[in-house]
Image (cartoon, rainbow, N blue to C red; front, side):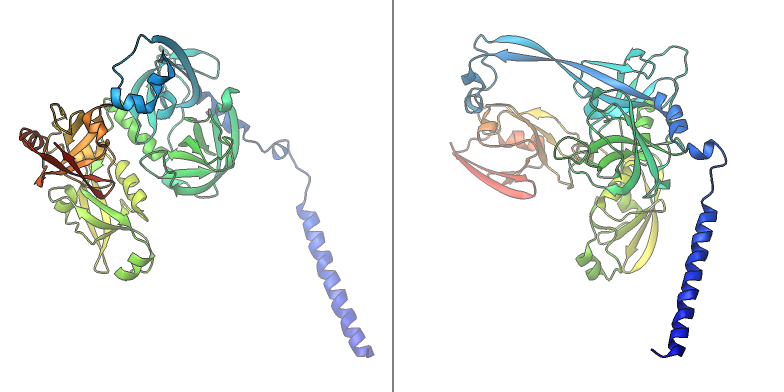
Length: 476
C-alpha cells in the first residue's frame, strides 16, 4: 500500500477513535450518581396506597337445589318427551355455591361497580374492604348487556375511599396502568402494565364490543376490579382475559369508564338502564365498500336501515350515508357506533358526521328511548296446535334493543319454549321470528291467535332464524 494511503487511513482511524472517545465521555458524564433517596425509589407505591382502599373483594353465595333420581329421568331424550313435570319421588338436595370477584367503590356513600357475572344469580353478596370489614350488599342495577352491576353498602356516616372515573377518550396506547383485584382469592393484588390497544372486540363478553386491552396480569377473581391510570383515575373495570389455560397470557380486557359512567348514572336515577335509540343501523366499511364508494380509507359505518319514524330519519340520515363521527369522536366501525351511542344520555342530542356522495355533512340527532310500538303483548300459546308451549311477543324497537338483535325485524318473536311442548317437539327455538302460517303473514300476536282458531289439515309454518328462512310442514 502506498504511504499516502496509509497516512489517510491512519487519519480516519484516529478521527473515529476520537469520536468514540467523545461519545463514551459524554455517556459517562450523563450517568451520574442519584442525588436523593427519591431518585433511587421510583415506585407505584404512592398510587397504590391511594387507590387500593377503594378496591374491594366480593363474595357471593347461592343455594341451588338438585333433585336426586335415577339417571333415566335426567336423560335429555326422556326429558324432551316427558318434560320436567315428573319428579318420580326424587329427593331435593340443597347445595351451596360460592364464588368471588372484585369491585370498585365509586362514591363515598358506598356505591360499588363490579361485573354482572360476578353477582349473577347470587342469593347473598358480601363486600370486604381492605381493612377486613364486611358489609352485606344490595344490588342497585344489573346490566347483562354491558356485564356491569352496581351495588350499595351501608357504612353509616363514614365516608368511604373511592376512585373517580377518568374519561377513557384521553387514554392512549402505551400509557402505564395498574390492575387491582383479588385473583384466585389470594387477597388484594396489584399488577402493572400498559394499554396494549383500544376499542378491542372481545366476543361473548358483552353486547358492546369496545374494550381497553392491557398486558397487566388479570386472572380469575380480578373480574370487577379496577384498571387505574397513573393519575389515580379509574379508566376501566377488569372483565375478561384471553387464555387457553385459565391463567393470564398478557391479554386482558377492561370495560371503559365511559360505559361504566352510564350504568352508574342509571343507578342513581332509579336503577333501570335505558340507552338511546336513533333508529338506524349499518355495517362496517371494509376495503371493498370503501373502494365502491370512492372513500380513501375503509372506515365508518355504512347505513343500510333507517326507521321511518326514528330520530335519525327526522335528522335527515339516509340509507347509503356513511357515519364517520359522533360528538367529534371518530367512528371507525359498527362496534364503535354502538358504543358511542350507548354512552350518551337519553334526552340530549348527538352531533353526527356522515359522508354523502363524497361530501361531509353534519346533523343533530335526538337521543330518545326506543319506543315500544307496537306493545309486546306477551302471550303463551295454548291449545291443540304446533305453536303450543311457545311464549311470543310483538317485536318493537324497544324489544329489539332489549334482546340485542342486530336487525330491525318486525312481526312476532319466540321468547321462550316450554320443554316437551308441541312447539319444542317441532323444533321452534327462542329467537325465531314467526313469518307465515299456511301462506298468511303473521304481523302480530293477535293475528297469530286469530289464525290458530281455524282448522287445518296441514300446517305450513315459515320462520326466520339467524337470517335464514325455514319452512316446516306438519300433517294434521
